[in-house]
Image (cartoon, rainbow, N blue to C red; front, side, top):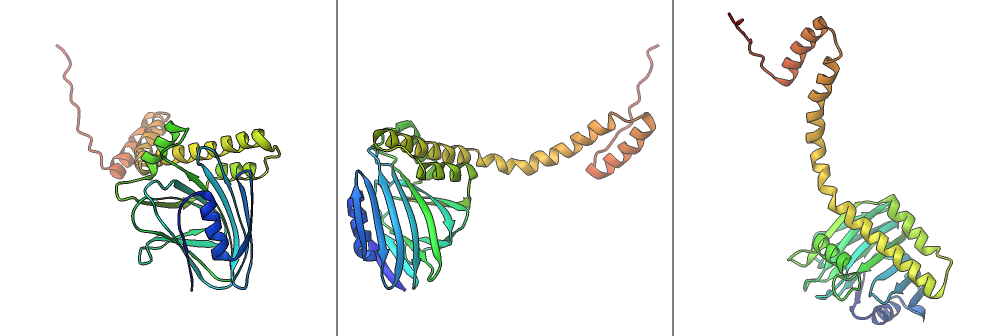
Length: 264
């Protein structure tokens, strides 16, 4: 396995480290970076955009000719990363001996690491991997309210947070929209920033309401007797008696006799 190491720092430093590690050719203009890679052990491209609010967007399209691990230095002010896999597999662990989490095609992940343990990515050989990465800083960000929500949802006291789940079609559409923005200059930048903000808002929204899913079985269980009650209410008297006996046996209800004396 080929082992690579990336020091964290400014966007320039990260891309220069990637250039040296992958032996690629780097071009950069107006905060747009393009690293073309053709070597004996890998080929493909890494593209990135840096915005003035320190939000990052990167797209990886690579194929390795041997297994590769990429260790990324952690730091206290690391952004929260949202990752979207479009093709292939990539695994992640906190440290070389940490538990590996697999991110596959049509899955997404949320990752934050402000601990002293590096994040390590693992790539398979002879398999094309395509994934998009969006980095959202939680400090020194102009979108202070959104950044605060991101920090609340996707960071913890240990400094290590990772979630892997099913992709969201709304986010996939937004990513395609980002990649195909026809405008350039200030207008194009503003449009792209707005799209990325929408993506992060969707992530916060869907993770904020994920806990409601735990109530689905309870709600379904409660609705079954309710639905049967509604059905029974439309029956005639003899049908109600038969249904009541079935209802009592199925849901273990007990019916006590009700004796009412007539007033004298």
